Image (cartoon, rainbow, N blue to C red; front, side, top):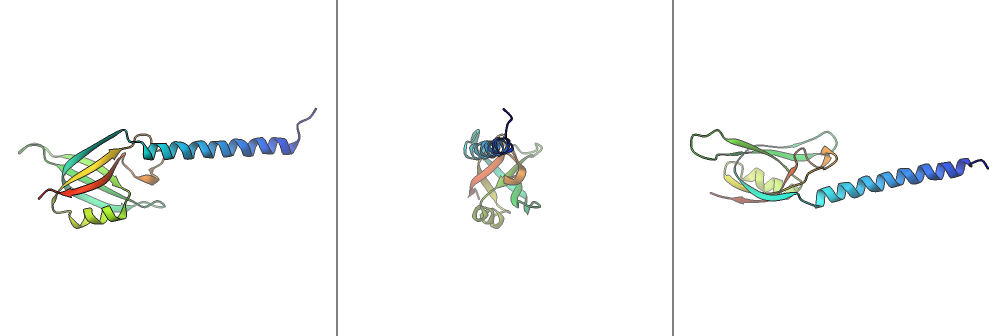
Length: 124
């Protein structure tokens, strides 16, 4: 008994839909489950809205651990335009950025770093 073309086509479409649903579920999970949460304090040195298709806010926080030591840089992404505006307005001040780390996000469309800033406080 030969397999009909319509049956093969329905299997292919079903497989494609299953792959899309699996990719979507994995993306949703990786963006909503955080591996770690924390706070970093320092001065925002770079902050820009960049990307070809998916524009994201990308920044760099310089942390000064102890007087005379080399500063450490913390790369981060911001998904909220309102929060990005707050960070931009307070760039010259010492800030505390609350972040969530999301490992395994499948595309850079959601941010270039795995650290997503969720809140900000002015320390000065």
